[in-house]
Each structure stands twice: as C-alpha cells, then as structure tokens.
Length: 190
Image (cartoon, rainbow, N blue to C red; front, side):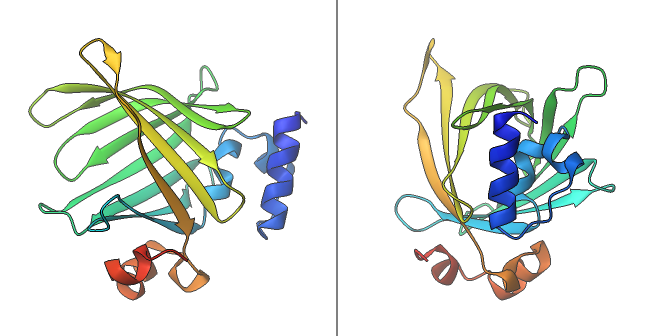
C-alpha cells in the first residue's frame, strides 16, 4: 500500500468508516472520506449555502454527489458521478447542472488534497468555461475547496469555501433536505 493509501485508511478508521483492502487501493479511494455524508459551506456574505451529499452507487463502483445552492435565485443544483476509466484507471467525473450545463474532468490525488485540473464546463447555451479546483481535507470533519477560472489568458483568484460535515441525522440527501434545509441553521459555523 502506498503512503497516501495508508494515510487515507487511518483517516477513514478515525472517522468510523469501515476500510477494506479494496477501499484503500480502489480507484475511488481518494474520495472515500466524502462518501456517506452531507457537507455544508456558507458562501461569502452569508446569503447562500452549498449543501452536498455523497453516496456510493452500484455496489461502490461509482460515487454520486448531489448538491443544491440554498438561497439561490434561480434555484441551482446539480449531480456529479465519479468513476474510474476502465481503460486508463484514471478517476473521472461528469457533472450535470439544473441549468443544463455539463462539466467533465479528472481527479488527481496529491499529497495535500484532490486536484481537479482543467475541468471543462459547457453551459446550456454552448459557451465553455475552463476551471481548476483543489479540494483539501481539513481532518475528518471539514474540507476546503478553491476554484479558479481561466479568463483572458490567465487564472482568476480562487473562489474558496470551507465545508463541514453535517451531523448523522443529516447524513443522507433526503434527510439533509428535510431536516437540515434551513440556510440559517446549517450555514452557521459549527
């Protein structure tokens, strides 16, 4: 097992997630800490919050992530499916938005987190956007994302948000939307 796999196994064990040899070395291993939980981040200004829930699909061969930006107008949500490319073994994703956009890209596990290099988003009107995101775990209860856009031949300053794990009663999409859907209650620092 690689050192990164050992660190992931320790983190999962601390979080109370059962770890098998397949979990440690399988293609979705870098994302396992997100699975089976919902996470929330308040956006700067406090008017909006991003609720994300991750769950395994098809006997753990895929990971599904659903999210909704609470307080957005128009309403904005989306779904991501993470999977391993059978030919290359690379970790890939495809993201569908409620506004008709689609993003595709890769996920690369690095020492300080997960990198989503050169994501390509195509909006419903056909316009495209190049993105670069870094997801940094902050222990087992939080993670930070920083996303930059390629515009005018340069990367923008990153948009950053810190997500925190919601409590067990809010660990599924349905429960989080019903019991934990109040923006004020869930976006407040925990």
